[in-house]
Length: 214
Image 1 (cartoon, rainbow, N blue to C red):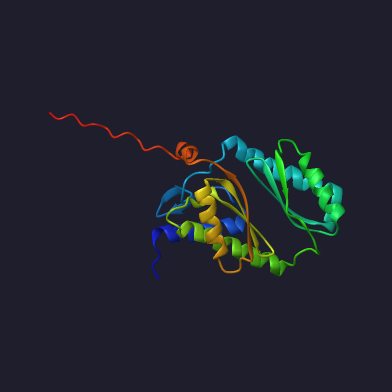
Image 2 (image 1 turned 180 degrees about the vertical axis):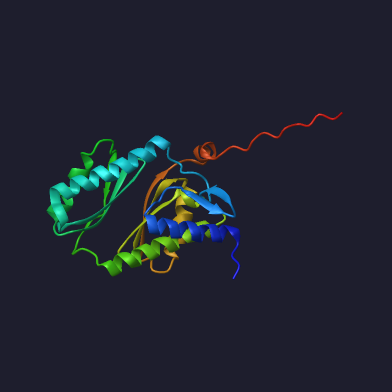
C-alpha cells in the first residue's frame, strides 16, 4: 500500500514520538535524507524550549517530593505556561500541586486542570496516547495548518491544545480535534498571536539570484 510522502512522514514521526515521549521537532530519516520534522519549526525560541523542559522536570520532582505517589499529575510546559492534568484525591491536594508548581523558577502561569478522582488506569492512558496520535495525524493531514505549532495532551478523553497560534489556527485546530475519534472534549490553552506575528515567525524564502546575460 502506497502512502503520500506527507502522510508517511507523519506516521513515522508519530511512531517515534509515541515511543520516546518527545513532542518537539526531531529529525526523521527518509530515503537517506534527514528531514528536521515535517512542518515548520517550533515557534518557541530555543531558550524557551530548554526552559520548558527544565520546568517540567523540576515541577514533577517537587510534586513527587511533596505529595509522593498518591497523585497522578502530568506537567506540560509551553513557553513557560504550565498545564497540569491528571488526578488527585482531594481538592486540598489539587491546590497544593498548583502552589508547588507556581513556585518553580521561570513559571509564568499555571493552568490547573487536575480532577479529584482515582488515578487513571493503564488502559485509559494507552487510549489517551492513541487519541493524541490521531489528533496529531489530523493536524498533519490539514493543508492549512503547521502541525508542529501544536502541542497535544490527552487526559481521560479530554484533549488539551497548546501552542503559539493565530485565532484562525486555534479554531481550525480545535475543529479537527473535536472531529477525531475518541475525543470527548477539547480545551484550548493557546497563546494567541497575530497573523503579522506569524508571518515574522515563518522562514523567509531566499532571494532569487539574478543571472547575468552574456
